[in-house]
Length: 192
Figure 1 (cartoon, rainbow, N blue to C red):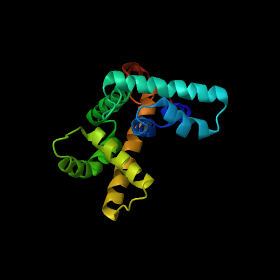
Figure 2: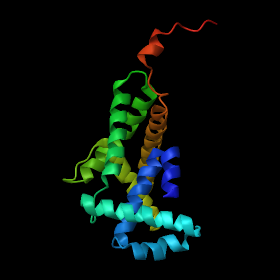
Figure 3: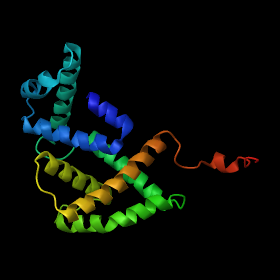
């Protein structure tokens, strides 16, 4: 909860990957709050009040997972919505000629996305979700201390650069500092 809140403010990509990990952690403990409390919350070194808040947070996520039917797989609607916001921003950035750096980074990443999608079989998803799925897979491989080949490492570096740029632009957009507005265009140019 505390980590999620911090990541949400600082890096939307890390936040989304973290939330996917929390969904998997909840599944790994069988959606059992007592097991989560015993293995995750109690050993965390938090105060009693923080542990209570953390327990309530996990309980609410468990409840949402049950209501939304994602107890075995899939993502909570709030995480799907966040991914959709990133997709919409991605499409807006590609459509706007004011963002050539973003467009160039996307086209450098596209061959990796195409390759990953070709390996996905019937589970076709969009470009941004493909990137997040790849990053999450890499995270899981690192946590399991699995060997990662140089080609995979190179692909992940490029995907990471691209998603980092999207995340940076997301936060700028949230602060209303990304896109020029019509009133910006009408303003008189600054005099030297």
